[in-house]
Amino acid sequence: MKVHSQMALSKKIAFSAIIAALSVVLLYIGSISVLDMSSVVICALLTMLVVVEAGEKFAWLAVLVTGVLSLLLLPVKLPALLYLFFGGIYPILKAWLEKTPYWLSWLFKISVLDTMLLASIALSKLVFTAEEPFFDFTGLVLLVGTIFFILYDLALTTCVTAYITRLRKRLGLKKLF
Image 1 (cartoon, helix red, strand yellow):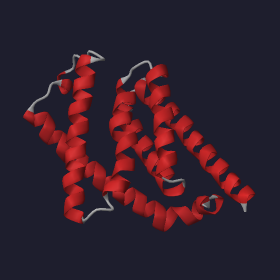
Image 2 (cartoon, helix red, strand yellow; image 1 turned 90 degrees about the vertical axis):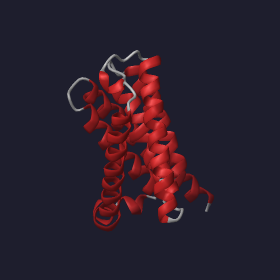
Image 3 (cartoon, one colour; image 1 turned 90 degrees about the horizontal axis):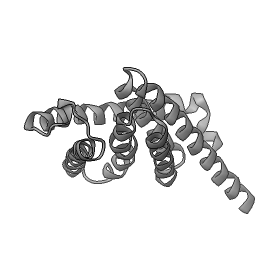
Image 4 (cartoon, helix red, strand yellow; image 1 turned 180 degrees about the horizontal axis):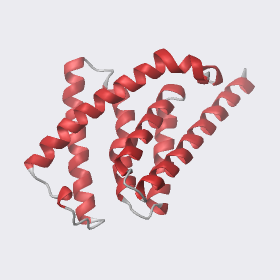
C-alpha cells in the first residue's frame, strides 16, 4: 500500500514538473512573438489540467516553478507576469471558488480578478517600469478587464468540462493517477 501511494505521489510530481516545463517553453515562445496572451491562456488550461489530475497542491507547485523560471528566463517579462496573475493562480482559485454558492462564487471571482488586474498594473508600472498605455489604471481598463475575465472564466469552464467529459478517457491520464 505504501509503495502504491509513493508511486502515485511520484507520478503527480512528475506530471506537474512536465506541465511546468511545457508552460515555461510556451511562455518563452509567447515572449518572443506576438502570442504572449495566447501562451498565457494555453498555460492556464495546462494549470487546470494539473488541478484536475493531480490536485490543487501540485498545481500550486507547478505555478510556482513556472512563475519563477519564467521571470528568470524570459527576455520579456510581461507573459510571466500575466501567467502568474491570470494563467497560473486564477485557475487554481477558480476551482476553489466554485465550491461556494453560484452568486457568491461570481462575486468572489470578479473581486479576485479585479484585484489581480490592479496588482499586475501596479507591478508593471512600479517594478517593471512598463510605459505602455495598457498599464495606466483607468475605469475603462478595469471595465474591459472585468469583461475579459468573465469571458476567460467561462472559456476555462467550458474547456475543463470538455476535458473531463470527453478527452480525459481518450487520453488515459485518469489511469495514471
